[in-house]
Length: 217
Image 1: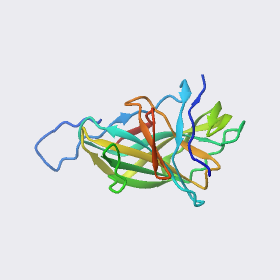
Image 2 (image 1 turned 180 degrees about the vertical axis):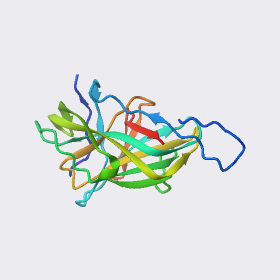
Image 3 (image 1 turned 90 degrees about the vertical axis):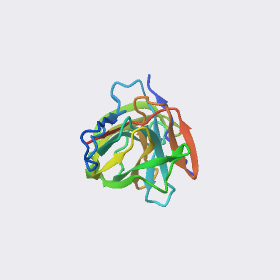
Image 4 (image 1 turned 180 degrees about the horizontal axis):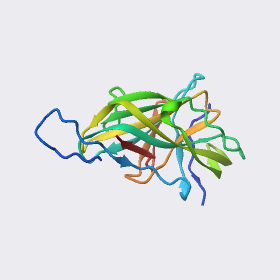
């Protein structure tokens, strides 16, 4: 069985002011980012987060987000990596045909998968996939000395999403791919609470990094 987990590889909000008294006012936009400078980073860590169409089970990565105050967002950004689990493999071409972005409420320290705040499937063109860099000498799964291709994404939801300040949410980003022949991993971002989750085969695993994401309008 292929276990879809990209392993650690080392190479060296919102602001809402209660303006006015109209209860129908739209809250101020959220602006939050943990996106990092991939090109000049000291290390890259990624975990597989994929919906595969060959019948294999999905893998899903989550990062918890708590917004400072009430607000709304329409745009979500993220960073990700592609690699092949074969020693010495070159940087692969990206295989995602789209992405599913979801925000879940918290339920006892895990995402409440049955009651998403929002979940939306984006076509690849709507995720604005942008090549950033390649890194070599990294470990992909169990294979050392692989080269990863790194990308950045930005997508706009069809309607604004309202969030409550001080409330814990869980963001998930999954690539839709043909198989696990090429892994897509959601990469790490700048630290917040140094914790994220991966769900695979019914089991959650915790990793001591935050994921790279942004919210805006």
